[in-house]
Image (cartoon, rainbow, N blue to C red; front, side, top):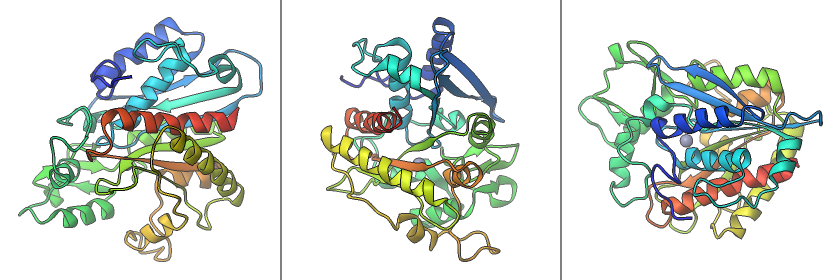
Length: 337
Ligand SMILES: [Zn+2]
């Protein structure tokens, strides 16, 4: 499949929202929508898909928190189209066991948790052909007053899950942020006041998902590897959730190799190491800052993994980004069947 913006690659709200409404209209027996409105009036959709059968279902949730990481959105939309309609977005008949999946699994996808940010993206995807990683970084995070180097902006980003523009006065607000009020901005991945958390919390307390994954992108500078799967192992994550996530991780790595990706072999200490740099909570200096998925393990026992596919690097073009994200989704569903 050749990736084409607006056809096989749906990433912006004005591309994905009409498709979501079309699914609901044409397949109302299997599709249910939940919606959360951002302060900006942009709509965040959660699409839940399952056959109306009485089988004991496994519940699976996929979300895409970040505005500057569109490949997860494109893959979520393509995968959903296959399961809902039986065809990929380019019209090819699906090879997936669609009926078995619909019978055994309830899938909830939030393909775009921050449409406010995504709307402002200057490109449909980031493949390294138009922007250097430094330019990309400033578009994503923003610029601070007097324009300090990108590393400083990165520190600001990690230490400010929420900031007040009236006092913090960023020169430019990057696309990663969600606008929460006239002057407050939040990070969808870190701050629970964002639309992401509101809609995830509502659905999780209803379905108690058996597996949760977040589709992210990063590793812009990597040369030999293009994919990474990680999950936290700290004391606040239930042991049984860690063990299940380990199995899912192995399956995702296997699937990536099958489709030609070059994954990182595994990074068991990723979160703990990352925590050394991110300690914004002075009451809990020994813990790293908890990210969105952690709360699902803590509150609901849900095993959770973070999927990372390379962004803004010419070795991983849009077509590969889409393929690798979808391969990760397919590995999870194969585990649950
Ligand atoms: Zn991300």
